[in-house]
Image 1 (cartoon, helix red, strand yellow):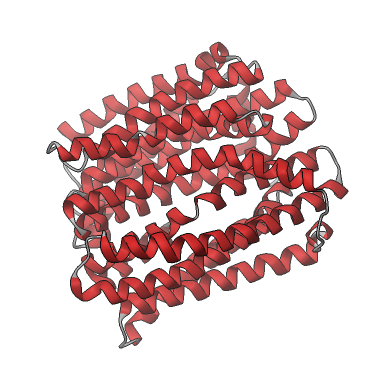
Image 2 (image 1 turned 180 degrees about the vertical axis):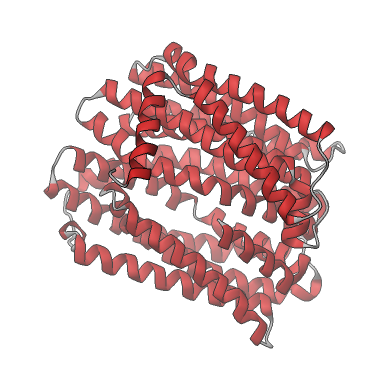
Length: 487
């Protein structure tokens, strides 16, 4: 997280606010073209984990290679979409400085190649996660972050267009990491040896499953990159720089929760495949609660010191960034509760009406934001819309799980939501006390002391209000063993 945030600062300095906005806007267009890949990615992870849970290595190999071939087809479709609709939008609809149109087109082409590498890479990443080789995933994530930082420092030595150079160097990093993942899988997992499955029905099953995911992923693209494009239409590329910085902060913080849930997800799916529904439900409760508490622990110091952190980090902070970041973190806090619920729905395979309903709700971010900006409301309103829809989506997810999985919503509300509400009430009270009576930080040492006090206070609240007796005893025992070196 530290490397990622520091990298963003140097990129902003090297490219400038406008070019930083241009890069993130163009890369966002390419990312939108990858909505099919995101849909198939969910299907791949679900089926691989399901086969491992069933202890079926033959079907596991078939699943891996079927998904690999389908991802190859998705790569071809992405190229067709990008070189037609994508090119048209960049050259005729996007609001860009006239002298950066050529650079934007070059970045667009390079970003397509970067995305294609990512598309082919999905089955390999999914296999590593399904096999729960989290150490490999963690090490390579750190290496990738370091390489991206090195890329930024290399920009200083290039006299060519820095925007174009940056996109080329990022492509090289993506390619190197992908090659390493593939080599590791080939050497470690016999299931990754290539074959051409001839079971036509299985292709249909995977594509059908991902088809409903496709609807949900289109909605996700509308919420993220779609709203980014709407902001560009009303406010130009400078607001896109603020939006990009906000995404960097929220994504860096969210990385902790994503990786935590990544460890839970295969277990949730495997327990479902084995019929252990009580254990599955227990995992969902734990993952939701711990995800929120971890996210709040990381977000609270930022929420209380947003202006100081952004000024220290970026020096030149684009307009609206502070309020963007604060609202985005609130949204991510709410979404952290939903991750395990989404995995549970995916595990059942009964996702048609789930995706239609939740996808429609999430898609409403785009038209609602457009209408509100059109009538003259300020840019931060797009984040408020997102927060409201996230709350509604959480409620709908719970009731869908009750329908398709006989999920105990009442128990979830008592064991998870009630404790989360208690913690959030304390956090809100603490926020207003801190904002009203504590002097704003003016130096780094004061910020570190302040953040340590915030984290320490929240940790005590978690022990008192967040955990039940059994979890509290386990946590205390775990810490004791760690200090004694016996765990």
